[in-house]
Image (cartoon, rainbow, N blue to C red; front, top):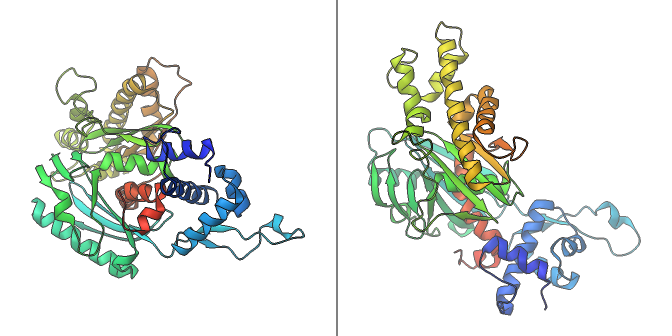
Length: 413
C-alpha cells in the first residue's frame, strides 16, 4: 500500500522525526495510518469510512482495513444510525465514533498541597477522580504511597481492571526529566533528585510516564483545550512558581536537560526571582498578610474571597490581584517577543480572578514589540482538579493516538 504524502506528514507531525523519504516499513506505515484514522474520528466523528478516507488521504480499501482493526481493538464503535447522506439508494454508510467505554488512562498530579488522581477515557474526559491533601508527610516515599492508593481507589470506582489501562501518566511541579522519571527539583515539596517513576509503579499497570505539570497541561490544552488545532502554542502556568511550555508542531520542547520553561526568576531580571517574588502565589499571599488582608496560613483562594467580599479590605485585596495579573502580563509580553507563537494560553491560579484577565492581556500588549493586533492571549479552557488529571494523562493519551496498535499490544512509548 502506497501512503499519500499528506498522511506521512500528518504522522510526522504527531510523532516527530519521520520524513517522507525514510523508507518506512509496511508495519510502521500501517500503525501510523491507524493513528491518523483514530485522530480523525476523535476530532471529527462520527464519520463514515468514505469521509475518513477523504480526511486522512487514504484509499477507501485501506480505511476499511484500518477501521476493522480499530473496531477489534476497542478504539472505535459503529453508530447504528445511518448518516443522512446514507439514505440514498445503495449500501448504507455506517459511521464510526470513539468507543469511550473500553479503554482507560491513569492520570496522577502531585502538587504542593495535595495529590489528585483519576481515570480518563479515550476522548480525554475524566471518568473517576480522587484527591487527598499531603498533611504533614511530604517526603517522596509517603507521597508516592498515597498516590498509589488513590490509583487503586479510582480503578475500583470505575471497575477498570488492569487490562483496560493503556497508559499511566503522572505530573509534578518543578524540573522533571521524563526519560528517567526523576524529579530533579520540586521546591513546592522540597524534593531533589527523586525517582518518582519508581515510586509510582503499580502492579499490573503500565510503567508511569512522568513529566512536569506545566508541560503536561500545555499538551492537554493543545489537544483538547483552548489551543486545540493550533500549531504553535505557548502555555504559561501561574502558581507558587511560574513556568511556561512551548508546543511546536505537536511536540513539547523540553530542552537539552528537560529544564526549558523555568521563567519565574528570569523575566524582568532586576533581581533574582523577580517574577516569582511579585506574582507567585506565596509572594502575593505574603504581601496580603503584610497588609493584614488575610491571616497566616491563607492561600490564594482566600485572598480572592476577600476581594469579592463586603469588607473594608476588599478594595486593597482586589488591587493586589490586579497588580499581580499585570505583572504576569508583562512577562508574557517578553515571551511573545521570544517565541512569536500562534497563541498564548494562560492557566493556573491567576484565573481565579478572571475580572483581571483583560488587564493581564493589556500589560502583555504594552510590553511586547509585536503588533498589538497579533497573537491571541487566552485563558485556559481546562481548570480545577479535572484539568490536573487530564494534564497528567495527556502524554500517554497522545502516544496512544499516535500509535494505537502499539498501545493495545502494551508497547506505549
